[in-house]
Image (cartoon, rainbow, N blue to C red):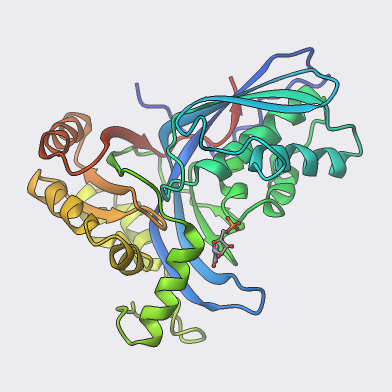
Length: 326
Ligand code: C5P
């Protein structure tokens, strides 16, 4: 059954420290609109994006321990470093420093969201670690406080604390929920073999723009490179999948296609399978397709699987809540 997302929902957290285990579920994100501006002085790009949380989940369980440890299973096990470079460990340490408590926890990650896929899996895991450690250590931070800690960990992490559908500005870390009437959208997620590194895709966009090879959307008067999210936000309010499909756009798509030209075949196969629209998610290489309802999404996923253009095709719906104790 489709889960209703309530923007006023409070974090489901115990007031006292949990003896553990605390289990937290966190969704993947796609970008319904991704307008990328010029590079800023800090090396990031100014964004105007619409984040959307979908029902493809990772799970973190947190138990009491004498040190901070991380183990994992599922997608990327054996490939993903579990040391201090891991965003989960960084999130736990950042939260412990913020709250002035020892960073002691035994964390276990069950991963379904593929790595380096444009679905913000690593950021999702960091958001889940914040919510799990907040509950394990009995900190009782509000969601806004957790999101402000999250901004120091990565640009997409604050959104995954909130979930739903939200406008992201700044480098993506400034998040405001989109308060549309409840509706559910149906997606097909075409997962690729191998990932794309986000910094490479941003760099490729800069290169294409310098060479005059990246199409630009009509931008803000103050910042002509940065495409506005207004059309997408208006389309969300109409609650018509065909209207939403026509408004989906991603400035990083040209760059992802330039680095991985075979993604054009995935997009073509999705259109041939009857999707209302298709685009690359974030920095790619995952492609997402909009369907009119759940059965339509299942048919598209079957056809993509038969066409053998991707590693796996999954159906998902959105919006769903962000990182939550379950
Ligand atoms: O914030 P996060 O660590 O997730 O960003 C990963 C990389 O993506 C950055 O180091 C940068 O190369 C690129 N990025 C960017 N502009 C943004 C967000 C990310 O250039 N707004």
